[in-house]
Image 1 (tube, one colour):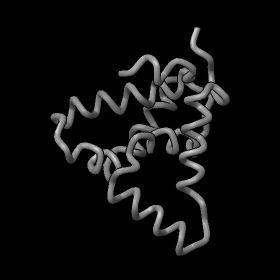
Image 2 (cartoon, one colour; image 1 turned 60 degrees about the horizontal axis):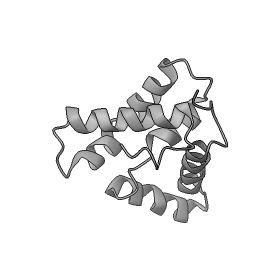
Image 3 (cartoon, helix red, strand yellow; image 1 turned 120 degrees about the vertical axis):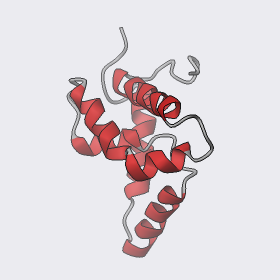
Image 4 (tube, one colour; image 1 turned 120 degrees about the horizontal axis):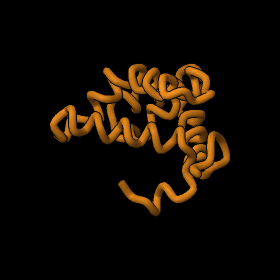
Length: 110
């Protein structure tokens, strides 16, 4: 993990990052990890974030769980759905991750 990248990050963002990295270990660290995470682990990751006791909505937890998965086919499918429906779910995911990473939302680290 890159401490410089997490310098201003909130506890929720760091927890999501740690869960993401734990999944890499669990999934054996292959090139397919991110696709597997995007397809099978976004909701379980979101549930784990909430189970840690953070005061966070399921929607925000799901958005944090999508962090780092933007290079996947599953993400490209979400982008295509946004374009087809005139929605901005992917933009919301990126904004939420940026806000938690910058310390604008969530709990500061002690």
